Length: 62
Picture 1 (cartoon, rainbow, N blue to C red):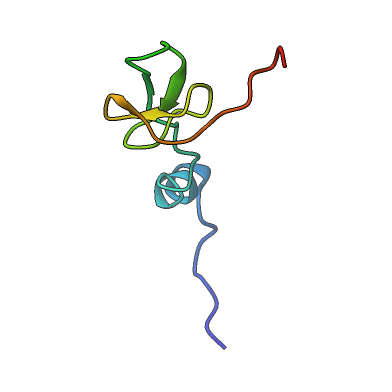
Picture 2: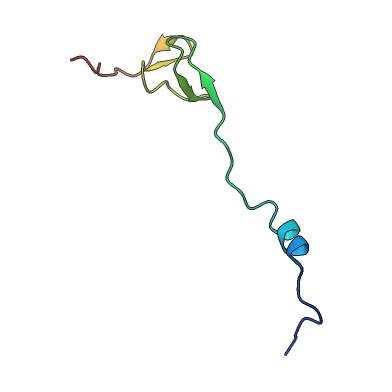
C-alpha cells in the first residue's frame, strides 16, 4: 500500500486548495431604478430589462 514519505505541510495543502473558494456575485445597478441586480438578468424590483418592461412586478404598497 502506498504511504507518503513525509507529512504534507500546511503550506502545500493550502496551495493545492487555493482554488476552492466562494465566488462573489457581479452585481450592477439597474439603469431604471438603481437597485443592484445580476448582469444580463431582469431587475427583480422593477421588472425592466434592456430599457423596457418585461415582467409585471407587484408593488409592496398594494
